[in-house]
Length: 171
Image (cartoon, helix red, strand yellow):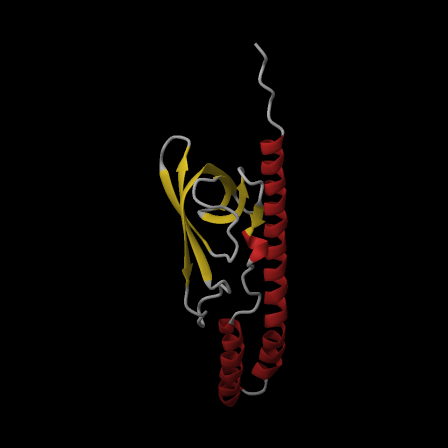
């Protein structure tokens, strides 16, 4: 389970950056990033970077960010009523180039080990290498879908909290 916290404030500045293409180690498919500066209720300014193509807010809008650790995974625009689940909008890749490289190098290493140990290594290495990618993709898909559902529930709660406000007493 993920630990979430919310941060509400006024958006001071939102800058859009285009990043370089993904490399072997990087798994983020989003080439766009947003740098957000928020002023919280106590007057502090906080910077958060969102790896997404979507940004439902402009400078001056009141927003609520949903953070997993320090990473924004959802946003609700309190002024416009827009919401975005960053985990759903631009999800991380399920299969990364490093995973394929691991299988290729594992196959090469098992061939080299075959020369030294005999055919027993092939009996062990082939099934492990064959099951590595499907098992890894299944685990990442499960983790991603859980995160998306949790963020959707939190965004629903933020939206309800924003819409259902206590009435002011008439004097």
